[in-house]
Length: 320
Length: 199
Image (cartoon, rainbow over all chains, first blue to last red; front, side, top):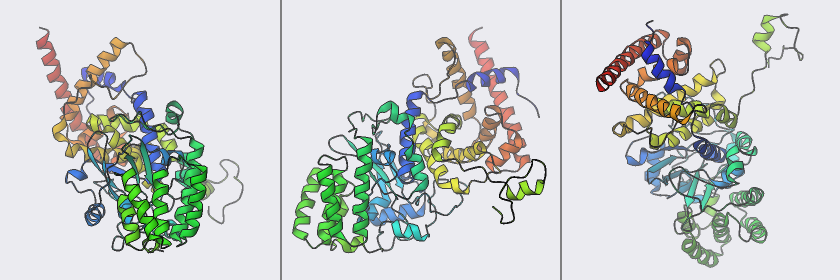
């Protein structure tokens, strides 16, 4: 085969010497990629929101849900620090958790096709020949069934696991991770366990993006985040098992242990669900109104609002 | 492992069949390990495959999310790099196809690729070269571009390229031949312009 001429080779040789991302980008991307992967693989695509179809499952379900989450597609604190990151895709809000429309810091609208199933349980499928970001097939394993969060009726096949990771740009400028991740996520744990270089350089939980300035992000302590997520995971389990009183007990422990915890938003949402599940509707609604004031752009808003209307825990246990 | 396999490894060379049937497969790397070893590979190839700079980070994230999802199905008969490149190509194609009008990013303004060696003057020259190469690559279609990038930048062989892209070997050769011709023609045009400019 005819080789390239000397000029072409020289040109390519010079261009080939630029072969690495700037260190700053490497650090940022490490945090972002491993954070999202650890918390439950999320594929972003900047095109879906512009009308391009990535996968029928995600787009259809998004339309059906009619739920929009304003968030950032940057990495998240909780997911990055531990695979036990707790998600609050509860009950009907599984719609929120499974299909989130994300507004990236650069103002590009990003769709998160959150049908990526549980890391260690999903069957090995093939990447779509033309579009590797298409959602995977449903997860069928018993373990996944036990652990997965409830999905709204009719979306069972599309929104298999609400393992969604979104980082919400809250009004105070802090990023909060909302992820739904399985604590038995072996591969996720292996991702999250080792302290990434980016984290060492930037400090635990420091979320930064290339396109937005999130320097004011809260920097929770890594250990406390892991503990917080562990408690909230137990809260979630209790709610899923239809045991809201246990959930409230665990939430009380959370409140005492972490009065200014990084996952206040999630804890409050869980508390509302638990209260409504116990029939303490008035209390739940009062807390819900307070929640909406404190977290007006929370992706959990829809669920929180629906919690008491739907009879509380009934929605959370619908899928068990 | 096969039940008939011995629990100890036999002497080297004692049985080829044992190796074939009983060899313990390499442990599957984690996503983190893949990221640490291959992020730059993915990043520079997304760049060379024409993903616009503003979308590079999203595209890189997509690659690793797909990697994460597909890792259990990774077949070790492929090299990790060729497997990664296959995913990278598909993600890049997705981004390119929707952003075809956003060409012409200025590498000089905000470099997305750097070199770990060289003086600032050299780096400036490298960027200039990379800018030229990027324009020439933009003139290739996606299929030829992918083959060309693998062959010329990553020094992969045609069989490796065919495996990475899932195309027949002859197709890989054919695309590479055409890509080289087109690239060479582009270089000659560039050379002519430069000559004219400095005449």
